[in-house]
Image 1: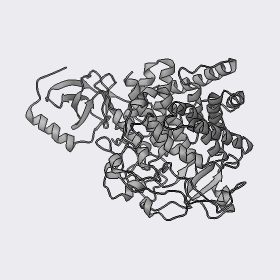
Image 2 (image 1 turned 90 degrees about the vertical axis):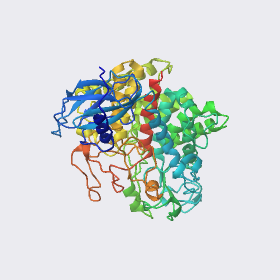
Image 3 (image 1 turned 180 degrees about the vertical axis):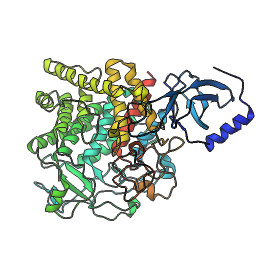
Image 4 (image 1 turned 120 degrees about the vertical axis):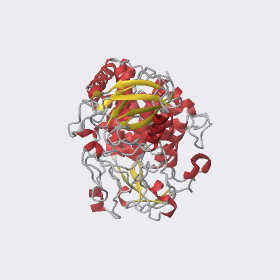
Length: 581
């Protein structure tokens, strides 16, 4: 409906409310809505029965509606309701008035493009061994950190030709998270997830420009950024036997200081089966994708495939070489106390690596191993269980499979993914925040916003592409709404975006640069019911979905990490690409 212009007094009140809300009631996507998209906000309190939408440019009331009561979360007594303003399709800026609060939202053609771009650009800020220049980074420019040309072989990593204390060069790559170390397991997973989504939407990424040094060459920026880390990964393979070091690290975490002020010796540490397999999978995947980009990266495709096959062969010979940091520290000095990325089951890594190598080489031995190690159900992608990346390889739309075994494999994996997608969207319409994510206590753990919320969204994109079921796509967008503001605390959980976003992430680069605003584009880990850092910070609540605190010391809820950035890249890019089709 439309009505006459709202009076100047109400307009003034609305403007005041936008800057200083009278009541903290409205939760919505702070980045905006597509014209054709479902548009829903949540009233985060009881008693809100109606709402009004006003065109901010004209002051015209364009919609009035009644709220719909939702089902409270099992752990919370808060009664909430939804406000559906989906009939609005005209691009523009609007005010939503409800419960004494006013929130501003936009309708625009590509509200997720800034999210996708910022998430990808965050990887550039994490680059090691090169200056982060002002022309690409603005105020977040900095000198090169950690050249890693003087890295020692830790006693746990000694091999046929490299002895403990030997010095190797292992430059480039990304800082892993809030710390300054580099980990194969996590960076290979991050690359694997982003390359999987690249395979879905190559034309989308071909048009993307996020202003990195390689922008303007013949390779998409996503792949240019990935290559910077792939180059480092190649240096982490022992040339003597093909094994892959688990990580490149200092013995203990550095303080919250600038990279150029770090003085600890850095080491490559133990070769592990999970590192070798994740390396093999990401390299095999890259070998296929980078074939088309020989102009910028001549010879890399073949080099990556050779490295992948060698790493896989090492893993088959060393299936029990799991990374156990406590055991390692009992045997060797110096002790290593940085991120473990420990994983006591490599079955999912074998499945992903064998799948990628099968599609890269056509060798039946890899297909046999993939079938043998295939999962018995679907789990959303995470560094700790990469089976979904293998599923994505098998279910890539348009992939032609030959033979009864391959077709049966595809059918089984498709049924697993479809069952998972069907199950998680049940009840989303009535959920407290109108999304598949966030309605179970188990949804809130370390890194949940990426490894559950964003990963669910990416999974639902695959389910939609395989079934054309629009409900899957709608619910993928709903999970993105949750990340971008439609949640209990009203945060857009991506630094530098939205009207309320994290200002104090657990991130040494942001903490040490002397700039008030954090480096933009990072998805923080999010609410974490475990509150493992509660001795250092004070959480506002013990409720699972409110167990978040925007403090630098909160490594359990407010850290950033490349795998979480990869989850945001995957979900935001896929959803932005699909709206353009």
